[in-house]
Amino acid sequence: FKRFKDRYGHETVAGYDGTTNRITSFVQGSGTTSGYYYEYYTSWNNSGRLQYVTLKRGSTNLQRVEFTYYDSGESYGLVGDLKQAKVQQWNGSSWETLGTKYYRYYTSDTSPGFTHGLRFVVGPEAYARMVDAGLTPETATDGQVAGYADHYFEYDGSKRVTKENVRGGLLAYNYSYATSGLGDGYNNWKTQTTET
Image 1 (cartoon, rainbow, N blue to C red):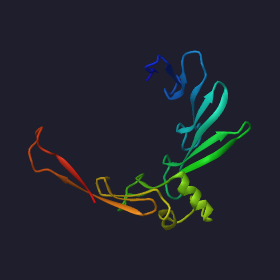
Image 2: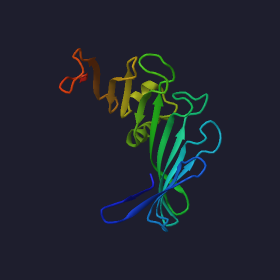
Image 3: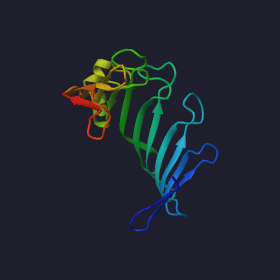
Image 4: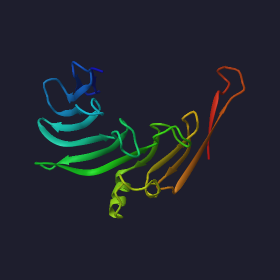
């Protein structure tokens, strides 16, 4: 991707690292510095993964998202799995966290999950409720997280979602899959997903 021009003629240009071809900036117009800037981890097991996306107006920091990943030996995720996404705001001298999104994964190919399969998503509001309740989301048990998580997933042997609990289990959805016995054709269905 090189550039984007909206209907009013405003142009946004992408910049890349010449060595790795990773995006480094996405700024408005040539010759300006307002836009998004991308930084990557440079060491350890998650080297090369996105660390920050920072929104700047000129050279002034506004907001950023900080990404952290699971490392070897950690529970609830494997190397490279996204652990947290923190939205932060620049207060003039340091970054203040506005909200944290937290993720947990299955770490083996054991039913009802699979290696690297997303298990829990705890959004910023649920994360704050856990902290207010005296829980540390990163060390809480799966049972404790389940009572707050925005999403919980289970899968079948083909890595398809078979169950999703939403809003701490308040809502539950089950999914089943079928393949048609009909021959291939424009007017014949091929696969079907049933949600209950």
